[in-house]
Image (cartoon, each protein chain N blue to C red):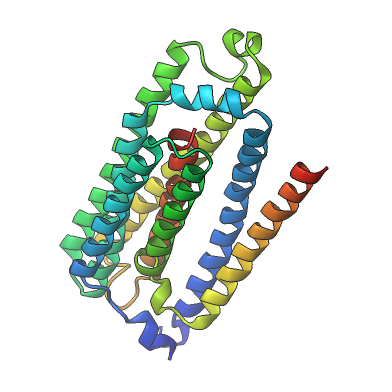
Length: 199
Length: 95
């Protein structure tokens, strides 16, 4: 199999190029947000005050911790520590599930108050308010889909680590999946202050 | 050359230090935005978010230890995004 040697450099470069398209995708959502913030500062202020800072801050800590576990799993696999790699990947997925559960609680509370896309309450209210919550659901929803995809990829890599397809000598797949996971964290690092803090 | 950078392994201790710094910065951004600073709190929050992103990219994402080409394309992507933001706001603010 020596002629099938993996091109680690190329694999990582390809992953980074993909991540740049993701940065531009979320960048577009942030541009929309900031343009409408300058147009409807009052409604955005009122909307932002309805978001729960405790949910937002808790999820920030949960996601940062998951990112730590993901980064540590790369160290573990390169040192040949299979059990530690699997435990750390489990920790990452666990944090992702906690994040999604908190997001579920947060969205349920909003739905309960009649705040969801196209809800009668938002339609009756000022346009700035429905734009704010529309962008809130767009940004956190798109981010949430990335969390789900990231968790599935993480579980898939864990299976490959378990089967020793990935090991100390060949682990670029794990590295690339953790890169994707850190991007999910990066996006949240900006969603959190923009939606929960500055308004 | 590429082997050397691919084999660079970050210690658990260093990763935990980065994580603690990120948590401290998160606490700082919450505190700074609780104070009524007007438009400055937006800039303060964005500045802290950028520092946090820098730490995640440099250490968790291993960018500090990758070949220079990776950093060049990262800056191309960020400049492209900055261009979109700048162009949009030039239109929004001075139309």
